[in-house]
Image 1 (cartoon, rainbow, N blue to C red):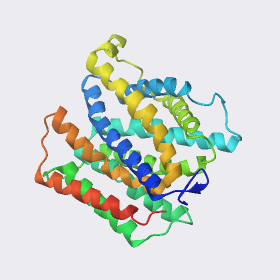
Image 2 (cartoon, rainbow, N blue to C red; image 1 turned 30 degrees about the vertical axis):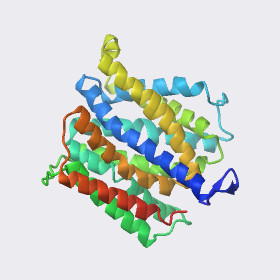
Image 3 (cartoon, one colour; image 1 turned 60 degrees about the vertical axis):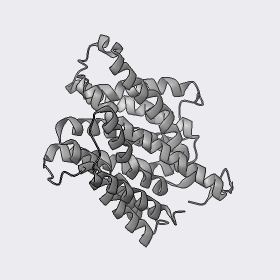
Image 4 (cartoon, rainbow, N blue to C red; image 1 turned 45 degrees about the horizontal axis):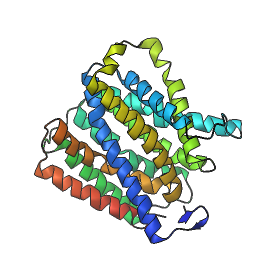
Length: 302
């Protein structure tokens, strides 16, 4: 992708601001792991969390989105459906189900391999993406750093086939979503984000056939539940998804996807503050590896 903003040459200073915005979004998303964990501990199901989260986000984004209902063609509309599934319903439901079903360390590590999967898929399916040494080395370095941060001194990897499969499905969904955003470049980023929210909500409905809503509505007013849902819906979804679509257009899907490696850094820090889970020397080393890997992977990114 060329270094352009609205058709004009992007200066280094402007490009740096877009990179910093991508970092900020990913660090916020890293915090959401703790938010979801709190809500799961309060008895909400994965699809219930997703539904409330995206309903809040959709209600907010409707106020600022172009009020057109459809895209320009059936093909583009189906493209939006795929975005809603891969970046919405299927991604979030499988991720939260994996957290509930499997081992948290495994899930965190597998989900954070999404940028590596994005790179692999891009190399296979996108002609203008080349396997440069900085890209491959940086991606592998960041993946190793994620492993150190997530396992945080615990070397034993527990196997849970179902949980691990769900986590891999989530990672693959996000990789596909990142690349599909390239095909939505002709539409306003806020409009695209609204379509993602809308189709995410529609495609999660079949889950309720097998797992009906059971969480008491009065429970949504509990401060801990309401606070975490508001953060997930208004900040992590409404604001961050719109910004991510915009940043992906400016910097390119492959470039911004590498910042997802930073996700566990904010997760570990937040866990230490909220869940009293301390950081070890291995976690600090892993964080440094992630930062170095992301820098190297993006050093020559276009």
